[in-house]
Length: 288
Image 1 (cartoon, rainbow, N blue to C red):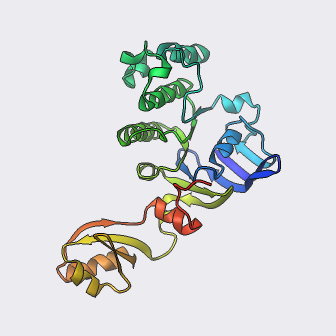
Image 2: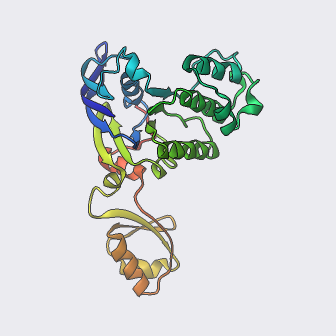
Image 3: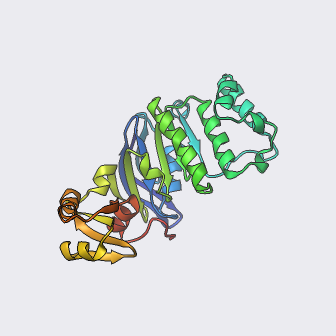
């Protein structure tokens, strides 16, 4: 679907992308994760055919996306903010796209519950509605690949969850997603693969389970009914708030606690935030 080889991008003397190599597989939901300023947007512009690389090879559907109508006809791009005249109404915006693609927008407008907002100006939409309108406009194209650059950055948790529910459903119908983000709580529940970028370099690319289980021993957060007794049984454990934090095999740790009648109230395994921190030494929420 997407193949990136030795990709670089310079703006003047500043090196933004420093030899990227990664793939996005067909029918996947791939998360593109890194802090603000890591190079996510620049990479997305190049993959989308909106910018040229300084060097390297980018293939989308086996072809160079730059100035390529065939590739652009198969992809849709969603950015954080709507880049369309803000005085247009939702109806004018969507009708404009439907006229271009020669499709009737009515079914998808109804499916996404946008009928009450058709006469509303784009400038008056909430962030959640704005992203929903962008997604609908993208789907009017019937794309095989949707590339989304920080699509949930300005959304509240409920709107983020609703957006990703739509992504999950569309993916089941055959749409591939490449989603950049530094907000991982909802994203990590739906992605199948992940690419970590830090300071213009790829630090990991692969299945999400490989990112979370890169070592045999993972960090586990456990809340129990008897913390003192649990700490006496678990070697090299530490306290973090109300949780016991320990590295080890989940099954073995649970067995030790069960055998000693210690009730596990909550157990949380490593998150993508933890994995990114381990591989880069910094938090994904940081800025350059």
